[in-house]
Length: 394
Ligand SMILES: Cc1ncc(COP(=O)(O)O)c(C=O)c1O
Image (cartoon, rainbow, N blue to C red; front, side):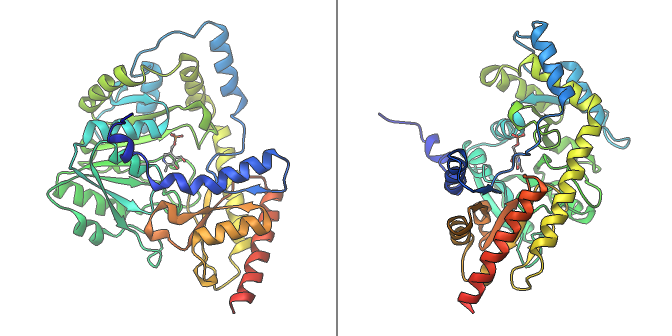
């Protein structure tokens, strides 16, 4: 039987990066001594008040079809929390709910891109981007943010990558896997290019609430940017709600209308009890979200302190998020070889950061999504593995 050409475009390399992770998950389920630091799923359970409001809604019969765009009350809360004084006035018509930021990105791709368009995405980038953008027939142009430059935005490289076919720039701020948060100047660099070349900006901000140092700046808040920006966010990371699938896009109302038409034929709205939980999260659970943020900050410091002592194996201190990057090239291994050998020798599963793009070849991404004692044990095993392999390669 024949399948559509789309099936080839969504069959990206990203999938292979997860093989080792899946092996480790199976081993953990079988009771083996493994520590899984390869996934971006917070280990916390969702704050109880949020779960209780979903249960209450379910018991009250909140089990019916919903508005395709989402409940006006929740969309209004999202709009109000995103509002800044010096930008166009936002309301519920600027927000559409999706089943996670991932689903929102897919919708943005379908509503903004034509086959043959080019989208610039900053490399390294989240593994699903290629398939998501290319599903439309558009071409992803990876713009390297080099390891040597600290994986930071390179405006000149971005400028050089622009062609008459360029339709949009996708930025991830803060970034996964690097944890780098864009500075005001870097954001301005993206704004200048987008305005000069009349481009859309798709801004993935799912780690925007998990920031440890500095201020997170949303590009849509910058002058002249709201009308050309789609901002994606969700409750997944900041409220430990990955499995609830509650995300959204904030955009000009005209684009939200197109999303609504797409939603009608794609998702037909999120469950009401999930939306009820979302309202409780955003209105009443910010203290619980703050506990999640400070816990990740403590763990970030703990892993950084434990792994940063080796001058040959640099570790990049993330400004945000739940991952830390380590450069293993001095061991004569690439990220995949390191991750495989580390897992076989110690049972610690980390992710080959090369899966996130060429700019991160030779690096691994380590999640700090387990509690402190497990994290310290994992770091001790990683250090010992590095010591042994440094001796071998010396
Ligand atoms: C950068 C980035 N964007 C989007 C997502 C997907 O998030 P959601 O659960 O909201 O779909 C992730 C999840 O890991 C991510 O790291």
